[in-house]
Length: 438
Image (cartoon, rainbow, N blue to C red):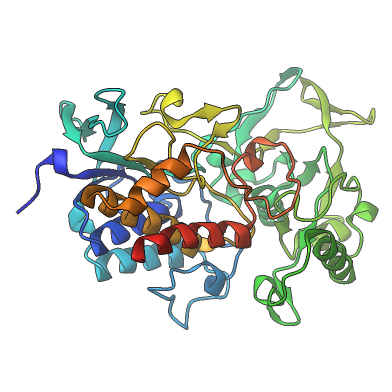
């Protein structure tokens, strides 16, 4: 028998973080109701989902063994760096294996979520819409938000006007869209480099405009996925940065010789670019590196070094903004570029408001998100039982926040606003979760 909504947690999203949340709530017997705007699971990795921003050639940039849920390993036959197709199959299998679909209302958007009162243990009023039906409102015991971080494009502004087309990578699905076009990609992050490598086989020309230097990590080192090599010994940040950047140059050389600026930051202070082919294609003259854009004038792009070139299409690979359109920013303690949440999960004002997946770290994988979900489920169960561990976490999330940087000084960029050090973060989340099993 289904519990009344006032006794259920509302869970938004059926992507990797949402499924992790569903599994952990299910496992601990915490009643919940899931909501998913699309008709299937997979979130970002379901290319059929209108909110998905993956493209035909998209693959993981971390290897499968560093990314999978430990509770449900990927099959041996899955590629080291799976495609979005293999990943969608994986999430569907995960949902089916644990019977998670029955907990979701699909084709259902959350239009608004608001607390009934200012009390820390307030109920939450959700307004939802299924398909084209009239919106419905119901009260829930708490709210867990897991609607993803890579759906709302971060659109840059340029001086002047462009007579060609300007797209964001969110609009890109296949390299055939670029056939015969002179294309300028703005930004050399992982998506920008992936698309540049795709486009060389279709576009008339490909240039890539950059404003800062990057560290390029090959996907394979010594014949093994790069993220599976090393990492057994814990080194101080300054030493790890020095050693790894030296080793990296043995494999990739110095990108400055290809026209990239020298990075004005140390390795790991920004997310590295994991791509084995971008420097290859630049070295073969298939892709040209350009400086930052100064202004646009008709078909012409003027660059900050005084050079200029004509293009048909500008493709902005400028990332995404955190987007929780159904929640008032103040409820999530939004400060600057991102919400300030305890362990990147818990809102300080409310007992039962949590976010899953609002975390980024090199190599965190879905298991890192699963551990978030495990902590949330244990906390919510302990809260209902009036356990002292729940009171301890409530006190901790009131502040001050722990340092999750691992000693690294991350760049002050929007995409780095919720970045953490993997080892430091997972240790903190595990310790918080383990407190509930004592």
